[in-house]
Every structure is written in C-alpha cells, then in structure tokens.
Image (cartoon, rainbow, N blue to C red; front, side, top):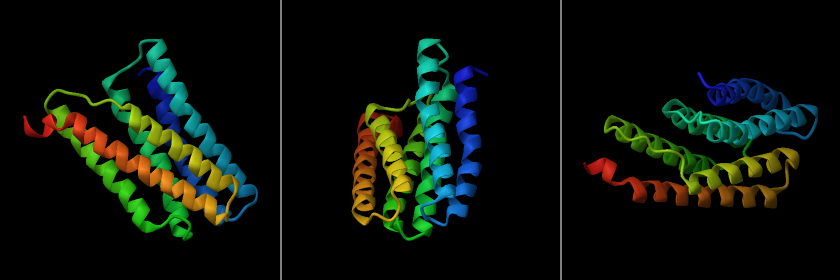
Length: 176
C-alpha cells in the first residue's frame, strides 16, 4: 500500500472521532466544536497531502483514485449530517448531495466494469474544497444564519454542477 493511500485511510479513521466530538458539541460554540473543527481541518488537509504525494512520487493507483473521493464524501457527509440533525443544514440540500454522490459512484462502478477508472475531475475538486472550507466556516462560526445559507448555496451549486459535468464527460460509459 502506498503512502498516499495510507494517508487517505487515516482521513477515514478520523471520521469517528470527528463525529463523536461534533455530537458532544451539541452544535454549540465551545471546546468540543473547536476540537471538531481541528479534526475536520486536519482530515481535510490530508486530501491535499495524499494527492500531492501520489502525483509527485508516482503513487497514483486505481485504489487511490477510488478511495480518495470516497474518503472525502464520508468526511463531508458526516459533517452535513450532524448539521442536518441540528436543523442547520436542510434535509433537501443533504439529499441533493447524497443523490449526486450515489449517482457519480454508480457511474464510476459502471466504468470500472468496462475497464475505465474515472478519476476526480476539476469541478469535483472545486466542490470538495469549497464544501470543506464552508463546513469549517460553519463550525468556526456556529449560529450565523446568513453564513449557513451562503455555505449551503455554494455546496448545492457546486454539487449539482460537478455531478452534471461528470455525466456529460462520461456518458458513453453508460451506453457502450
């Protein structure tokens, strides 16, 4: 297993600790929310680090191409789910995110069956980065409604855009 993949697995391993501290915070500013934010930020930074290592040290693998976006999805959806539980993130927005993630994952599975691996595209990376930054802002400044709605708008717009782009660029995988 490559160093890049080990770092990605470390990101996945941070998710239960993140969820536990988010739960303990109760959605309120305070020590547990700050600990959640730090865990989330460290986990988010591993996304950049594992990608850098994979590219610069020729550690790009099909396993990494599959695991890296999955780790991102698990981390960000964990945060959105907690915010949804607290009534801060609307269920309809979470459903848009989940629908896109399942659809793109399904597309990737069909492509793999046909011998093609669909790596993360540019718009997917923008979606992931803006989602991670936005969720960090929501954790750092809980309870600011205008900030929450701005973050939700960015997440929904980038999610829909990147999902549509994935299907436009890879539609042939469904019909060949």
